[in-house]
Length: 111
Image 1 (cartoon, rainbow, N blue to C red):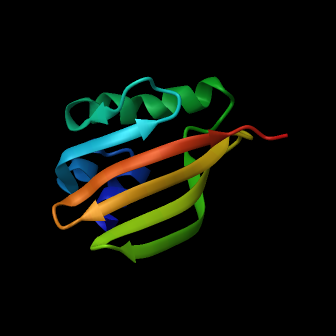
Image 2: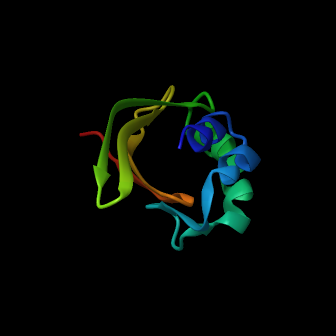
């Protein structure tokens, strides 16, 4: 999981996918269908432009992380925020013996 997280945080899709399970999927609440391994590089590399288009720095920060071992899988939850914006949300990763199975991200609108 550490290699995957380091790859995502450094915007290095090749590094992230080395730690992904064969059937890996990324679920983004703003994207209609799941992102597959094959489409992950394009998706991840477009993040910086999307963040900058809403006034961000092109980076994000993670806080309030929690991990649990559930039925032979590691579940990791965290809060994230696009630096320089009020856009944030949560992320959930499921990790098994083959690597990261999925990541799901959700967005929260500030009130």
